[in-house]
Amino acid sequence: MRISMIFGGMSYEHEISVVSAIALSQKLETKIKYYIFLDSTHNFYLIELNDMRSKYFSSGAYSKAQPLEIGKNGFYIKGMLGKKKLLDIGILLNLIHGADGEDGVLSGVFEFFRIPFIGPSLEASVLSYNKHFTKLYANRQGISTLPFILHKRGESLPDIQEFPVIIKPVRLGSSIGISVVEDVKNLEYALDVAYEFDNEVIIESFIRGIKEYNIAGAKIDNQFVLSVIEEPTKKDLLDFNDKYLDFSRTEKIVSAQISQNLQHDIKSAFQKIYSSVFDGALIRCDFFVCNDKLYLNEINPVPGSMANYLFEDFWSVIERLSGSLPIRQSIATNYHYIDKIHQAKGK
Image (cartoon, rainbow, N blue to C red; front, side, top):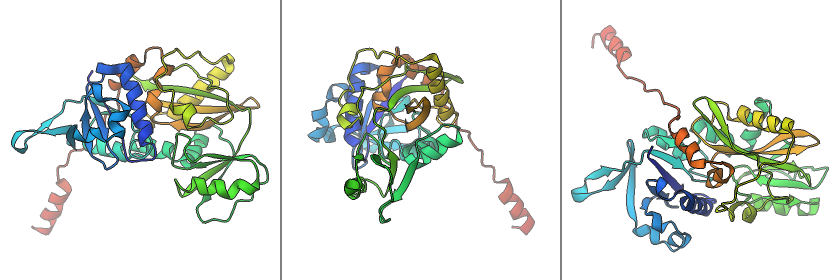
């Protein structure tokens, strides 16, 4: 199966996507047929494997790479006399974090142009990119979330009775714009920080020492393929560096030392979240456990480096998933209704 990768995008998480793609390219190398870069001005470029280096992008050298145009069935290279050649990309692996890749913009474009891709659909993106919608969706699926307040720019300061709290922009990941607030004196400043990135924020109780567990997976041929359950490095709040400067780790992750009952609960909750909404995507769900109760923290529809380190044989999972993508129904247009109108009117 031919698989290509797209990364970059126009978002606050652009650089994270680049780092994520470079780390994955070092693991997969020539298993990926083509590397396609979407720059911050929405231009597409074909990147050679030996150019998958951070300096190549930060220096702007990528702009000299082969430009691409998106169109029906894929990406095109301009040839002699303006002729366009369709690039045989096969299945496109979406590795764009944040806007464009996780908010549904490119999912809609890929679906419109009939480009098969591994990643969240438009519907799945809407539910997982917006933290407020994620909580509503999880609760609908019978999965608990921590109590929260939705606060919008311009509203009066919320009346918070118990501190500390954590403030998160609604439509952003990668720990960007997040603050832990210890008392009311720092509340306004933390809100200002979050509002640099979004017009809405989520405010939750911040529970020190809470247990956190991550699991990734996909549904392939109607069966769930799940990773090991990871317990992240113990720290009150995982910041940007904790999450994204260790993408290239190669050591095998040791499964969290938890009870069989908790393993079952986490896997069951993941499957309820994934449902059929995330068909065609490999996602990661992050859970909290507090007082023996399981809560969903967030859904990562495009996890960092596709959470490859959580799988014993990541490439096998991607290959199998690429052969089990949802098929979009074709709708034939026959104009029977219009013809009947014409006949009725004698025109």
